Image (cartoon, rainbow, N blue to C red; front, side, top):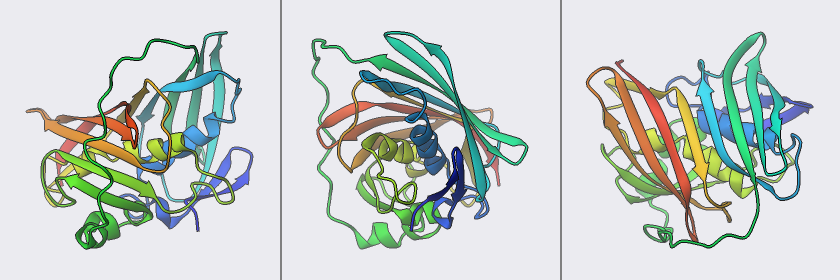
Length: 256
């Protein structure tokens, strides 16, 4: 049981565990972003360079089916490296990403925030909610809310843990765990009712000042909706040791 099965180099088959909340035939962008991260890790790797920024632009829903990931090196410097990736199904490109790697070097450390709270005990309400049981991606994660809730409108803080491999037979990394979870900010902190409105992100930007560690990722997310069909979600990302970075999403908002 996994989110993807590798078919060949750069080719994967998505399982039902990637399904998103809007349509069972399309994927949540969390697994797609994690798969992009997985594929980029195998693209021109070099010791001492760590992924520090990932931007994904979403051109349209990604189908639950066979995907091809194409990667490239845009700039290959000694201290920084810029990569690109795109996700295709057949002859259609569904999203495109750019990533920056920055060389590791000792620097003075500034104080950072601790996690808002430890990982709380599992709640039956979280597990049986629409988020925890209503679609494939939601069922694949263990959601632990600190503030807010699956059906509560407004800001939320939640820990997440994926309970299955991203790619069958391959170990999921902490960075892939973070990428898998970071696209959930607009869902956990929704400012409008799922029954009445769509609020779909057209992009995702993850910025990290250190590498995440461990199996649990925490997201402290807030969504604001503007007066003209657009919204913005801002999330602070943590592992169990403290803050690691941020994620932002630009939202397309419309009545259902």
